[in-house]
Amino acid sequence: MRKNFTRAACAKALAITALVAALLFCTAVAPATAAARRDPDWPCQQIKVPTISAAAVWSGPTLEGLKPWREDQEVSDLVERLAARRTSLEDAQKLIDAFSNKPEADKRARLTLVFAGVFEELNKQREEVIGGLARVAHRQEQSADQIRAENHDFLELRDKAGSDPNKLKELSDKLDWDTRIFEDRNRSISFACEVPVLIEQRVFAIGRMIEAKLD
Amino acid sequence: MQAQLIRRRARRRLGFGLIALAMSLGAGSPSFAYTAYVTNERDNTVSVVDLGKMQTVKTIQVGQRPRGIVISPDGKFLYICAGDDDIVQIVDTTTQEVVGDLPSGPDPELLALNKTGDLLYLSNENDALVTIIDVKERKALAQIPVGVEPEGMGVSPDGRIVVNTSETTNMAHFIDTEKHEVVANVLVDSRPRYAEWKSDGSEVWVSAEVGGTVSVIDPVKHVVIGKITFSVPGLRSEAIQPVGIRFTKDGKLGFVALGPANRIAVVDAQTHQVEKYLLVGQRVWQLAFTPDQKYLISTNGVSNDISIIDVSDLKVVKSVQVGSFPWGVAVSPE
Image 1 (tube, helix red, strand yellow):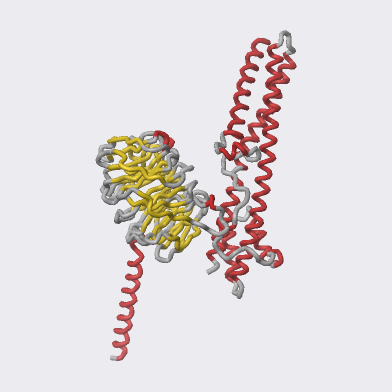
Image 2: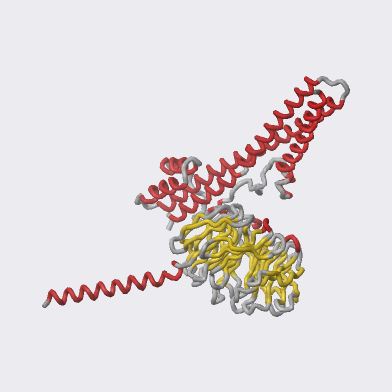
């Protein structure tokens, strides 16, 4: 009975060891680029772009030297709604249409101010996500170290003559649980890695909508 | 009597109006029939875009990691590099289904057809080879060793020379299409991606993604006779990564896709000076004209769309959503 349990547990431990190695490879090494390998704060396959530059997403009037967009209440309200990712791009288009359809003398300047606000807000959101990914990357490394240590303890106990089967089971269960959490978190990381790109897509899409209204 | 005269005048006016309307519709109509086919690298699909409606009308499932795409001169077939499946797939444009494949060699990425559409040249990135395929016989005629990580392929207007670029060797290899051998190598800047001939055969332009330049090569003397550089205020130079190139038929304008700079550079093809930058979509990769050259289409990998640019106005007239990571584009001949 004990022999059977030990054999099963051993197979499991080996599988877990292989899994942890593979997962670590996937999260830390396989991101494939040399840059990713050098950067312990970046667990993603995507190339890390710390901040979006305005020139990459905007070819309208300069955003330098504008008055603070928050001082214009209507602009500020619109920025808040456009920057919120729950606002669909279809709705964003409608909001921009409504704003630009109002007759006013300095429409071009105010539309530029709207983009300046959206750009600032979404860049801020993106930096927060990148910061969060760095924290998760570090936590995963700690978890991997912990799983390796637990695996080592388990194998040591298993190979020891007369080891307590209950203790062995306890270690095996803990290893199982921690590995599951590690795996779940890895899956979340791969989803979270898409978020900076999604935000960049949003900045670009909104910029394009606003630029179309400048003429 | 007077009432009759008024009616006749009114009819004549209406007649002129109808003629004017028909003429205005007729002037725009050539592009209305065209269809663009866009490979989506991440989706394993090809988006079919009706350029009249300017919208995606169908999605065709193809092999894994589709990138390079060309269309036969008669518009009946698409040839698509499905890199991760190590094949070139043939899609019938009438049924819009995959109807066969060609023996491409491993990891095909980019391909070019000769003018008559019977020979296909493609680069095998992992094997440092260019494969020549007889399209009708569906068999490989020759494999020519070139530099490391071959990529761009450009057939000369007379079909005698194919230029292949190798990403790691940083060279443009001039291949004689009859002798099946490299006749000249020209050193260009880092990671050359694409080669495009002017329609009169007088110049070949080769884009260098990492070098950030386009080398202008004299295809007779095999020397670089000019280098086009790009600069966008506020953008880091490493964000400017030239990839796809196209020329207008009159040889006056060149268009260069600048990757993550999200722009297309409009270049005076005679002076080699950049005239304008057009902000199009994110990670602009490849370009294709409609046959009447009224529109230029760009694939934008990160914004998952294509931009349709009015060539005479040099303005983006529409962005059309396609699949995930659009890469290559081909437009039907009619």
